[in-house]
Image 1 (cartoon, rainbow, N blue to C red):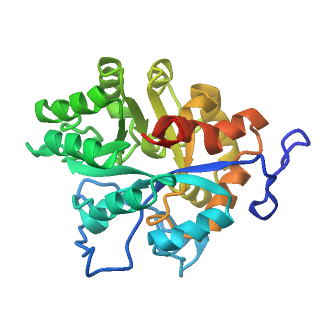
Image 2 (image 1 turned 90 degrees about the vertical axis):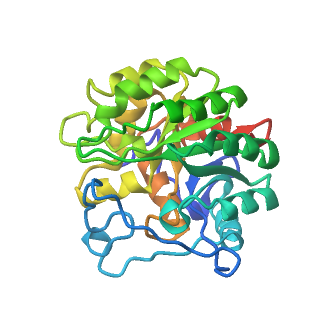
Length: 322
């Protein structure tokens, strides 16, 4: 239960001073003629998802989950109704692969609302030049690289010679390098490489999606000694998203206690909320409410940082997309 010092918030009754910034929204176009979809299968090394996570039927959210299509013209009123001031539009690789047209067109059309994060192939020789072009032509906020994934959770492409060229371009312009680790047992095995890269490229911000999905069996909900080095590097940040909330719901783990543990380890100024709309199930309003519920053990200052300030500071420059 929430304490008197930190009352629960309702999306329908938010005070004007409670602001939200969504650091992880996967836009998907209704217009499939202009933006054709090219779905892809999950990696064979990706771990299985629990029923009820990332839109899969079953589990605590039931057999018929709501999986809404977040076209940009649909997202705008959803965001306004939920008091969300801005969002990071993250390319949806499972729908569009490396064709970032819709993300870039949407952020170009609404530059005061959406900041673009594209997804590109870490091992493609054209990726560094393409990132530079996107930055100069579209005011790109960040890049999310993908490549082969090993069964043990390591990502050999993360610091490969070709990937390092893209890291260097991102560092030159001071944009975000957004990283997802999806592996059985969480992202712990990749922590040493991530720490080394963040220390090497100090002009960019490294943002780790879904808190690197730590195992949650121990008393600190997976934020163990393997994750401690991340807390010492000031340009590493974390997204706490609906994927995390789904996992906690499906495993009967108290999300508010996990968020409290994460803030204790990393600080509220390093953690940001992301809806994961377009992948996770539920209405946008529900996603916002679930995150509000998870903040009941935070102070008002910590809650403001996690819900708004950290994400905006990391992804937005001078009140407009970086």
